[in-house]
Structures are given as C-alpha cells and as structure tokens.
Image 1 (cartoon, helix red, strand yellow):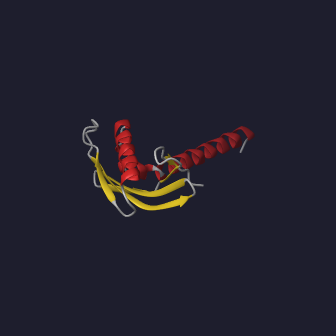
Image 2: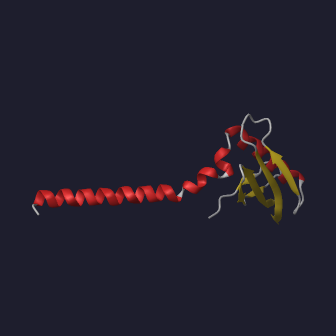
Image 3: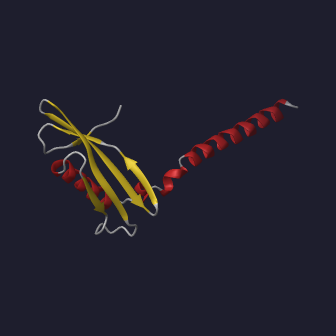
Length: 129
C-alpha cells in the first residue's frame, strides 16, 4: 500500500469512527425528545415557576398542588403535581425540597429541585454539586 493510499485509508477510517461516535452520542440523548419538558414553551415555564413559588410559600411538608398549562397558548397539554417534600431551617435560612412530576403525551418525568430563602419572599433555586 502506497503512503498516499495508507494516509487516505486512515483518514477514512478515522472519519467513520468519529461520525459513528457523534451519532451514538446524539442517539443516547434521543430519549429526551419525548419528555414532558421538551414540549414546554417559555410561557409554560413561567407559569409553573409561579406555581412552585406559591407552593413554597403556602404548602406544608407533604402537601401537594396541581398545575396545568391551560392559558399558556401551548397546544400540548402539560400537567404537574408539585409536592413540598421537606423543609430545613438553619438560622434565618430556610430550604425546601420540592418534588415536581411533569406529564405530557403519556410521558412522565420527576424533578427534585431545592429552593432556599433568607426572607421567605425570594426563593432561590439551589445548584446541586
């Protein structure tokens, strides 16, 4: 095999392997295409954020509230159950764990965000490390 042919062969094989790896990586995330969050529009997100804040302010541990995206302009019906799982206090700081179960088009997904506040008004989503 000539040097030129060998280089072309290695470039071709390398390109095929790279293309296959990229395709496999994209395929691994394909399951996210049909999750409820993939159908949400900005108005849905704003609406559910408001519902979560209301639950943080008004619900006791173990209590739930339901949310539906009616009136957001989205043709896909999305609903959620928002449950305050637990509350922890450390001095002036209060943190609450929330369970959110989203449903759309027969699919369901669960989220477990935590929010904390110092003043019981400005709840901040906590990043998980």
